[in-house]
Image 1 (tube, rainbow, N blue to C red):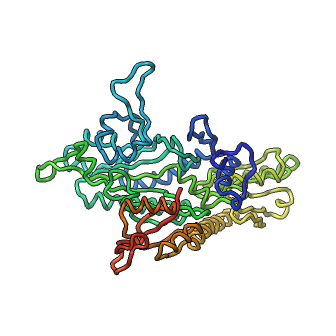
Image 2 (image 1 turned 90 degrees about the horizontal axis):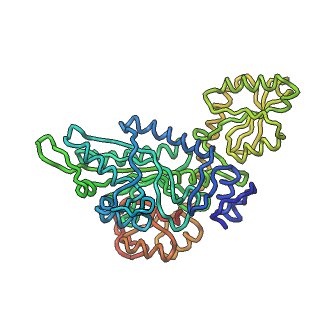
Image 3 (image 1 turned 90 degrees about the vertical axis):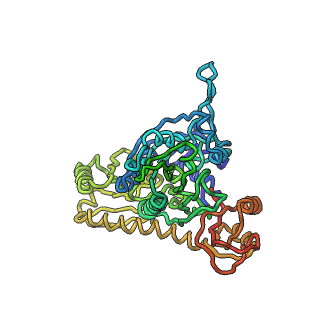
Length: 476
């Protein structure tokens, strides 16, 4: 089945079955395995290293904004969770409850966190008294649990990992500004680290986070034309503060409710990386977060000790990168194929003949090409190739986004475009019920608002006056 991780290393072609191609890549590259619990996956070493590198990149950006990392409990008291009605209604179908301790029934069930707004509210209430305490900007890297109806590795799993940033402020303007600032951080991370072009904007009411005043998103378009939400930032207003009584004394010695936001990027971004860049030969990974950035493949090193000695010299010269030396007894064909499937950006091939000519052969994963370079100046050569590699990955994904983006004005045009796997820009004036009707009819959802409309333009679906130009697509 398309949602099952294959147990062999055969990679399905994208053109034959994109869903099976995706899971076959995960299997062949040894990223994840299913457990015997629906939606449970094992994160294997290479993909966990990749996730750790993602954490490092995001943490570096957060530090500059005054964000501190914390760790909060996994369990939430059921009565506390139930206080915020809109939040509860949004997550109720996905919540896991613990009702027993061993054979004994608990006095009150515990919610296994689907997200941590509630537990952060309890924390903020305990540590906030005065405007001098604010702002507070905390982030945690953790696992959360949701009972998904359909599962697919990294995209929708019962347990997944993410960062969730929660912050409170004494001024509404600062809270809103910080909400948008975090979206800009996600945008920069996606484009400049992951080489994924994304659109960013505000979600429509039907796609808004449960309990939020506004939700802002970055959305990427996969190679099959489906959109993937890659990161969200939510302005919560005082909704949670009023429910959980988070107050502070302002400079006039009056009590006020804090203004709150939350934001997150999860392991579903790994799915975005795979489906944005990879090909029928295996993974293609952005250079900055590739677990192994450069692989040195030795040829006949057992017969010429100088091969290994020079491989070590190259590794030392390139020590600011993650460089692996493959001096195993596997055949050259197997080594280069393994590096290709694993998505290692560059393979440096070195043997006795290469050393005699003071040169090496470098294989580029993105282009699947080999070229000969002089051994002298290898550091400068690699730096140049890295810039070309990153630019090429971004361009290929951007070309896919551009060729699939289309503007329409009628429902018939919309239906045709969706069936052709397009990202649609369309005038919209519908409400939440209209969003649901459109999804039932076409399978498409609004991804985010592109811009406001001031002209007298009709909504393609309701024929009412349109308020916005909105991006629509089928989505993961």
